[in-house]
Image 1 (cartoon, rainbow, N blue to C red):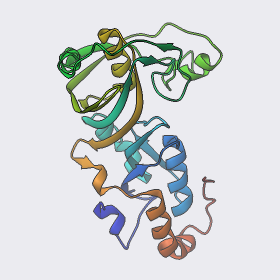
Image 2 (cartoon, rainbow, N blue to C red):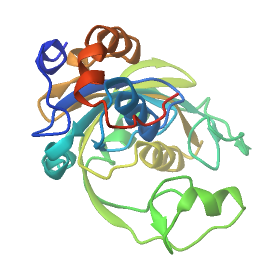
Image 3 (cartoon, helix red, strand yellow):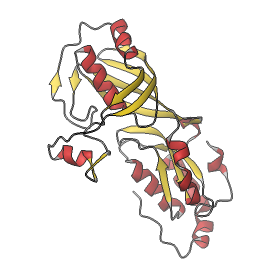
Amino acid sequence: MHPAWTKTQWDFDGIGEVLLLDKPLDWTSFDAVKKIRSLFHIRKAGHAGTLDPRATGLLIVATGAETKNMYRYTMLEKEYTGSMQLGIRTPSFDSETEVVERLDFAHLTPDAIRAAMAQSVGTLMQVPPMYSASKYGGKPLYKYARMGRTVERAAKEIEVKEFSALKFDLPYVDFKIVCSKGTYVRTLVDDLGRLLGCGACLVSLRRVRIGDYRVEDACSIEAAKELAAKVQPRLSMKYAGSVPAQGN
């Protein structure tokens, strides 16, 4: 666990804290931050780098004055591990939406898949998926998508340093990706499926590293609850005049 979670003295709302959290499956990044705020009676907190609800893994949470420094963490390189399913496509490019297309993948070999992955490495222009939190007209894209609307999105430059296969169990392929800020792994998977001519859908994703910060040093929500039970009496006295945010 990261040293920040083993402290006995806390200053959440003064100079602030930087906490490493292992986000659970099916939680939004906002849900996770809200829960930490509630557990530790924190007035101000935010996260550096959104994870989709269907993704798990490392979320850097900053509190107090440290929220002004979140740009230091959002700009860092990201590393993910995950699994994709070949032969299917969904509107969200992951398992959050229903399969809309099924294609044959029987002709594919591991070497062909590796070669296609290699074509996805480098500096690329990527269009944010419709099912994402990117904004259009001040509204998240996913809200338009859920209404059945598609809007124009500007492509953004990203860098993919590594896109490699870890295991083949077709139609499933386990992979590793090292990439820059702002990269949508779901889109990389969908693009790979198009390149292979068979479609592909992201079925699981875990962020294991942000810069030098690793998920092995992160705290789970359950461990955070246990820690809060130990320190909450002191925090409650310190922040007696505050109203904690409501969590899940």
